[in-house]
Amino acid sequence: MSFSFKNLSSAFLLSTALGSPVLAQELAQEVVNEYFDELRASGMTVAPGQESVTGSTVEWRDIVIGLPEDEGSYTLDFMRAEELGGGKVSLSYPPEVKITIDPKGEQPKADIMVRTEGITHIVSGVKAARNHDITASRIAVEMATGEPPFSMELAANDVVVNQVSSGAEALHYKGNMKAANLEMRYDLDDGETKMSSTGSYDDLSATFDMDAVNDASLDELFAGTRNLSVSYQMGKMAGSTDITAPQSAMVVETSASSADGSFSVLDGTFDMGGTAQDVAYDIKLKDIPLPPFTARMKAVTTQVKLPLKKVETPLPARIQMGFDGLELSDTVWGMFDPTGSLPRDSAKLNVDLSAQIRWLVEALSAAEAKSVPVEVDSVKINDITLNIAGAALNGSGEAKLNNATFPPMPVGEVNMDLRGGVGLLDKLVALGLVPQQQGQMVKMMSGMFAVPGGDGTDHLVSKIEMNADGSILANGQRIK
Image (cartoon, rainbow, N blue to C red):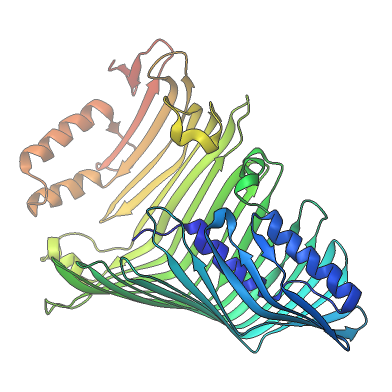
């Protein structure tokens, strides 16, 4: 099942936008028109419907809003604004709004229902600087498609949003939000595989600072003239996924004690990262009476940084991923080491790489490029760390690339340090996990690229140097 993330995210934003600006009488007309202008600026169409005034309350009925590129619409039966005094207005709107999305392509049509409970929305401030203070006991978004059958529900409880909308022509949003809990559920049945998943996330909070961006202004975001940033934190998480497929049937349960992360596009650079603590996976096979296959990690980290704008000077990029404190259950170990020959200490992995890169085409059109769309000026191994089953590998290095040749010629060095590797290899051979002949071959190859280190007998170090003339040295000995 495929569904456009753009459409889904638009629908979710619409669900939170149902309480957007309006004030009473003259002020009400002014601010609701600002809101309609915001929707039009994002590519939507707006038919405001009938307007009436009763005392201090202004009401608009049958407001029809069309999604960008004529891919759907929704109707607000009413929107009311009641003057509270002191330049403040309370907004109210229907507790249920149905949104129809029709991508008019290969992707399926979707119906989305937005439901709100106990919602209040107070608007204050002046033109081009509106304050929105929103609370709700529950905001739920339900989506369903027909082919293949798919349904999903997201529901946030005890929601608080504080937002400032500013800017006349270039709209800007800044604020924070929190929710006591977020519930998630989805079901999929494509005729062969049935999948049902639930999830719960506690104590969510987020801050945001962003320019309004739509399809027409993506080039400005990539060029760095528009920016956005979001950061988040959450507490306990728990989820369960039930899968029934032709070859397997299982239940996967996940949990974590907390997580935090961020997402930004600032000055034309994409940056996303996050950390989760006390992560656990439990896999239960429904057709085989075995204990759960369990993996637990103290921490999991990821970081991705990528420049998006096309400039002459190379810009920094980075990718980092890793985990710490990985422990596997005896069920997992027993699959390949039933006798307990291997040390079962917790494992650690960290891969941290960076580079200087330059786009040769606009990043938005990179998928259509007929040749390599990006040029790598230099690369750096900030850290490679792997500690597992009694062995420890560490690596670092950097190189400058000569892009005048094809493939580009690297000039630099790589340094590796391996402790306990030979002992681990011998145990893998004894367990039958590595054929003896291949084990011997690995030892022979290590003699070409590594030399004994200074810390005991099972310690190898390697320094690989790549020179401008194309030669390669391993620990001072030429191998190319």
